[in-house]
Image 1 (cartoon, helix red, strand yellow):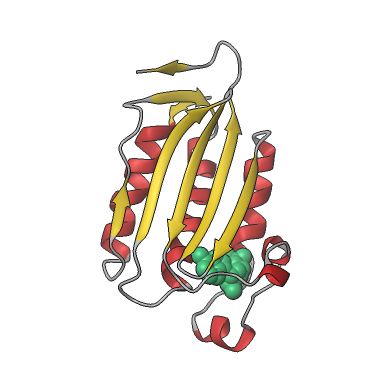
Image 2 (spheres, rainbow, N blue to C red):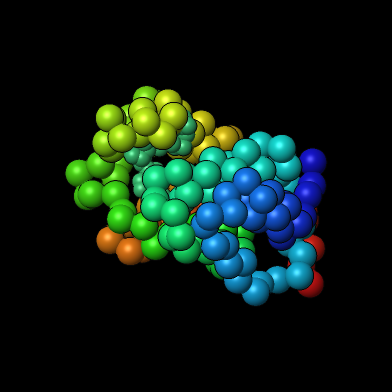
Length: 155
Ligand code: ATP
Ligand code: MG
């Protein structure tokens, strides 16, 4: 089915501002609408997983930002936080089931280590992928969803 990705991101951002009021969220200006072929509930789950991580794995007060863009035949959603980051050795493994960087601390925070594995498989089911870059103060998850010819409107 088709859905407006900008709408979905705005809904996820609104929910985040309620459930994670201790993390200021900035939604960057972007296209007004970006309609493409996707499963809105599943992509919303991806957004929620990534946004929850940006709050759960960073100290209170850490800034979180979201941006939607259209680049090179794909829609991109960028979810960034200014938290401590993910060490290089862990960056591939965080997408593995049950993998947590700091097991003791993550358990305190209630994580099971499944969120990113689920998010990655949902995005792959849309023919897309998730990229990660991280350094202290700048962790960025980028979700790329390819556009299907004939299924796109933008304004
Ligand atoms: P769940 O999502 O199942 O509740 P979780 O958040 O621990 O648990 P994932 O979402 O798969 O599991 O994330 C795996 C690990 O990656 C986390 O435990 C954490 O160590 C690390 N991580 C994920 N996102 C961030 C982030 N934005 N900043 C720092 N570390 C992160
Ligand atoms: Mg998680």
